[in-house]
Image (cartoon, rainbow, N blue to C red; front, side):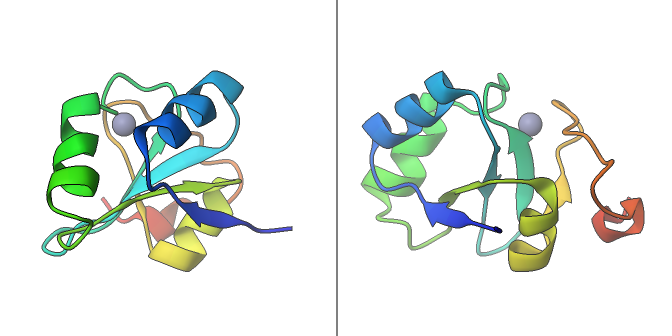
Amino acid sequence: MAEAKEIETFDELRNLRLADEGYFVITDSVRPAIIHKVNATCIKVDSFNLKVTIDGRKEGSYFWVDNIATAAREFQARRCKVCKPELNLVDSSTFGQ
Ligand SMILES: [Zn+2]
């Protein structure tokens, strides 16, 4: 079953990384949403704190999704060019360039 869940605290982020399942989607008010591997180095604690804790998720937020198809459908998320989540679950055209 498709699932997406907003991450509201650093503890949640940390626990999801430890579990090492699914993907993160980072949304942004001025840029397309991006999907990352949960343990990618591009998931930065400072960025999370700024967006979620300091800005109160007004400029974007962090979500956990069970798979890439959910990220594409719920967020029209693009694949991160740095950590390169797998594409085998959806048509690659979903992610644009
Ligand atoms: Zn990434």
